[in-house]
Length: 199
Image 1: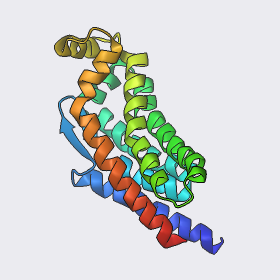
Image 2 (image 1 turned 180 degrees about the vertical axis):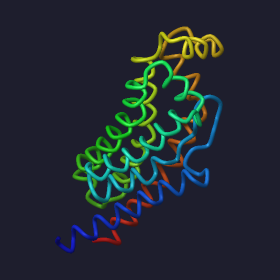
Image 3 (image 1 turned 30 degrees about the vertical axis):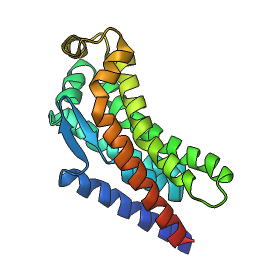
């Protein structure tokens, strides 16, 4: 194995460990109503930006596996209820959407870094895509696969949402903005620092 491969695997393992520790100590997922405000997109963004889309996919998969575990055990009220409706769709929701998000963040960074020769804004923009895409893919899949189920329709009724888009906006609300700002800005700063340090 090449020296660069060992370094990449070590960095990847470190970011996986950070994700798991964040989840274990409660920093990764903060309960807010039926959803969780998740900051686990931060290490995913750092990995996707500094190591590429494949690393983003692996780190997204770790996030997804933790989320799916919460669904199976009932630790998450929402995904636990959705698991009762469809285990397969819940797996796609928890794992598939997070893997897709990690890949997309890496691809976005690879695309925008060419327009940012000084290497300043591309890190922040790419890192902000992690929580934004996580919310978009997760909530989008809920609307596609679960919108008609009793659990979601009850949430729609409680929120007074007139349509699926309004449901997403009302459910995500302030939590989505907080994730976007905290994970996005902090993730961009950390990713830029790590990238510059490793060069």
